[in-house]
Every structure is written in structure tokens, then in C-alpha cells.
Length: 159
Image (cartoon, rainbow, N blue to C red):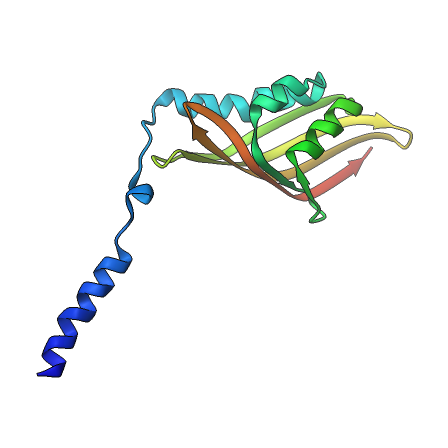
């Protein structure tokens, strides 16, 4: 008798614990425009903000909780990035970012993965640098913003 009673109770508890809460079930209306917005933020807006030292634009791109993890594992906040951009202009000649994968999800998040390429000249001569980056964006109040960037695999070639 105890086994018969316990099995339905355990099953009911399992279903109740594994069910999503209303907050987890929320969806955001996603359109082709969202895909293009995130793509533009990553390819155009990020580059423009850094190139022009435009902290107003960067402030719009980065969520207040933004964190950057660089290829050495150092972690930087939105404030750190804003301070850096306001003080230092770009030292490179060209910058491009190729998106290899971009996914937009109904929960209001998007992921971007790709390869960045930087070329320039410094005291040691001409160089080309490539790296891989992953970004996560969130859509809040109808606006997409980056919440995290992770950079890895930095490789430099000298001419």
C-alpha cells in the first residue's frame, strides 16, 4: 500500500519541480529585424564606437551588467570598457569581424560567434592579428544590448 501511494506522490513532485515557472516561459517577439539588429551591433556599431572613441554609442551597446573576458582571462566591466575607449584611440589600421554563427532566441537572447581581424603597423612593423569572439546579447524593453564578450585564440603574424 505504501509503494502505491509513494509512486504517484513522487511523480507529482517531480513534475511540479521540473515545470517551468511563468518567468522561464516568457517569450519575446522575435523578427528578422532582430537578427539584423544584432548583426549590425556586432559588425558595425561595436567597431564604430571603438574607432571613433564614441562612449555615447558604446553606452547604448553595452548592458549595465556587461563583462568582457579577454584572451588572458582578465575580466572587464562596462565601466572599464567605457574608460578605456574614452582614453585610447585605436592603434590599428583596419578591423573586420566575420560572423560565423548568429542565433536569436525567443527568450530575448542572441549569441554571436565569429572571427575578428585587425591589421596595422607599430614600432615593430606591419602585423595582422586574428581572434575568436563569442558575444551574448539580451533584448530588454525592445532594445538589444551586449551582456558579455569572450575573446580567445589571439594569433599575430608579423610581416
